[in-house]
Image 1 (cartoon, rainbow, N blue to C red):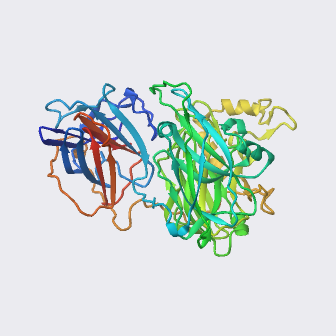
Image 2 (image 1 turned 90 degrees about the vertical axis):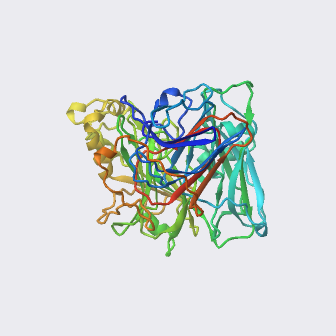
Image 3 (image 1 turned 45 degrees about the vertical axis):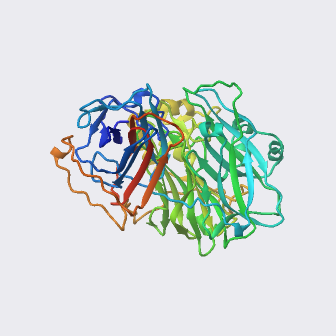
Length: 620
């Protein structure tokens, strides 16, 4: 991947070779890969791995035996080297390549060709490097009960295809109120390969919900859109996650006074090169929930903030950055939240294929407070609940904004808001305490006048079907659909973006039964007047890095600066990747770090151990 930050290592005749390298940018046009990039495509792996002039990875340990090559190393989160990618709390991609053959003689200080496909093992994993979450099982004294929600022989799609499989469950009968305190994945061998994510939604009881609860599952599209009004995310697991544990002061309430229904949405996909020997390959993976009668201090609640999925959410084509905002207005929080406010302690974000960045902003009396949450390197296939370091208090009257950025540069047609992967969305679901029941969905939707104004339309013909334009004269008679498809986005995108940001929108402040908060049914609102804008500072207050200016002669590759390996005792982050079940011949192994943006961070160290063959490893 052009711009990726790699380390390369191998062992030969007892000598450890270990280097900080980077992938040279191609001259051709390049589309930045997602964090779930298929590393099996040789064309996505540029051929040249150049040695960094500044060697910023420290080798801590290296040796080889008959089954493994072991390399242990560390690196500062921000090295101030323009060839190294700063490690932030955004979603990052760890890439690795293993090859049975070692580099040719003399390649240690020169250019190295990245392995292609013969004999190569490669892969990628999205990860939050700076986030550590308690993954311990519930304590015995909490008398936890277990509820396992599994698919029943969901059919795996053929190579190169994917499906969304849904199954509705009724919660077991409980005599008293309980608290959900943890969930974790239940993975069969098939699920370990094919299951990409699993999301558990709470449903509103209906005849349809009860009907589907008596079935063993079906394709999600068969449930309708949205599926059975099940849109409150209770649990969200994605590939690579070990689950989620609630903080000790809160639990999500399971009530006993009425039946509760939930739908489990699972996304299965099959790699193009998968050897599909069984046409009826199935999977029964799912999620395990832990809930307890030992109630915690607070009931946790769920609040969805963002843009209501609708065609009025328009993303023009061919643009590297399109910003869309969903609002939870002050009138709604003032009416719904308790006097002391609520405390947000975790969030899960949701965009689809072209969503790249998201942040949750908080406005109080025209002043913007520090961001509740942000991620500048989203991956639509890796979105799960993330605990905040410190709960964020939101008071009555605060205005919340879910702001999403999209990259539509590779699309030739507009993208509309909706629930399918071909459409887009912008949602931040927050876990908070204490629970309030007046407001569960706090969305907004661009008003029709805003949409028309952003497209240069002054007026529509009354009663026309399909909708036709009556003014301005040069557009008279044109259908709204034609205007959407033929609009000159290339030259008029700035006007469109300005109109959507400054135009009015319709708040959608609903309770769990989709009833509007009183007085908000016909309300129109505008972007708040922010007089004091919060300036982001991505560095650590405890250990902030100030990088010196980079001289022009330091930007090019020069002689490798060698340093002896050093061992350290105190680690802030330690990640171990061990593979001791498969015997491999000594060879070449690469790991890569990749990211979409570069930010300053602290001098904190990242330490990794690999137990495989020779190493290519890095960030995207």
